[in-house]
Image 1 (cartoon, rainbow, N blue to C red):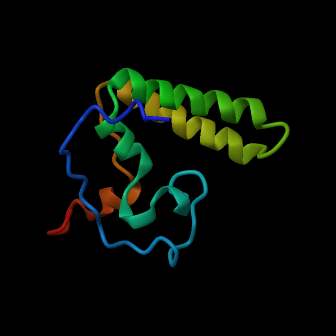
Image 2: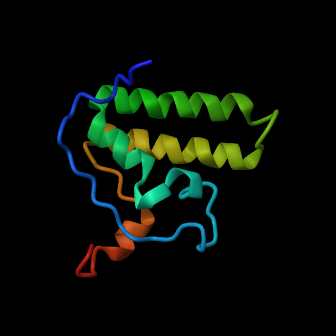
Image 3: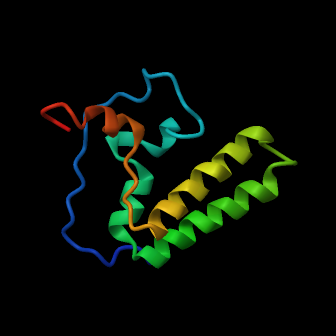
Length: 111
């Protein structure tokens, strides 16, 4: 199945040399499996998708986490729902999501 989010060609996404496997894992804001190779999945979605597609991605995640909260993740799923709600609100406000680790690097020569 072809991804519907690949309409932007030739966009280079900077890769930082961050070893997420060695850092303590934050399952809500920066789960290791979403940052392989130093790239954040939400950043990729913002670059590769239209605002409407990205917002739909966030809405789908919000629904997923709300519906499974009582059966699987409990409070952690509600926190993931909140994370996605914050990304959705930022998108409607025209703001780009910047992962926490990149906010910390903004002051550095590589950030």
